Length: 184
Image (tube, rainbow, N blue to C red; front, side, top):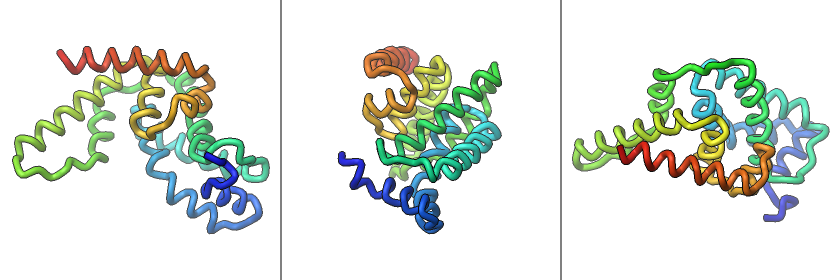
């Protein structure tokens, strides 16, 4: 993908020149994806809220220095990831349990003709969310970036600051672990 043609990068560059509507468009496009990533990674609504605000504050503060060297979404998630890592370092251990239920409320269960199927889908998602929560931080982040945002190995490597092969290994170990846990 030619980054120069990326519409988000164009909007960010317009925002750097003072176009507030361009920022509003970026915010509207990426707020849901960013918040879901932070909520599922942090597993705590208060931490996710704080990191969400901090991420957008960093975007605003960096608008004059922004250069379209990567997709805007990759740059945004990299900022969020770095703030998340800092948060993990400051706040150990992380909360568990109820946050998964809160996060799952955000997912719509597709309507099915059979109520049993909808319940089965919900139970499967709940089990998957709990299994993802049990992954080590680095594996969980890689899985969420891959599954939730459909990012490439290269994008995940750029966001996390890890090598492509390291990301590939984290995903492989995480997926094996998830398969084992879901098979139980």
